[in-house]
Image 1 (tube, rainbow, N blue to C red):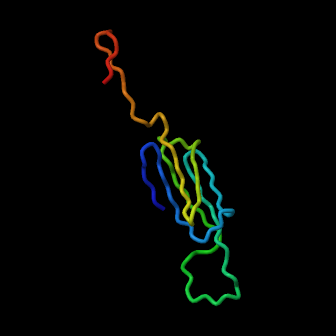
Image 2: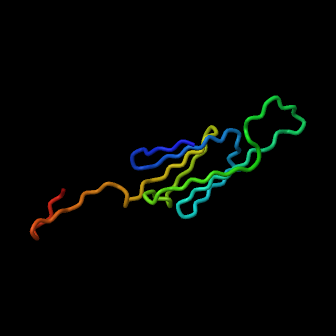
Length: 109
């Protein structure tokens, strides 16, 4: 898994080679994203010389901070890579605060 911030969004990528898109399952509960997938077993008649990729059902959880807008997560799956785009919440974006002096009109700081 790789994760980084790119401007107004947080990007997370999971490498899932050999995973059928139909077996992917993504859930979010509160601020926890769960990725579940299944890699099918190898044909029992195949004589394997090496096996390094795990088979069967697996899952991964990622705890997200409160500064992300989990209602607007977008997910894509291309070339064995699952990519989540999670926007930064409006409340977490930088903003200007008006400062008043002696009851006078506000001055942007």
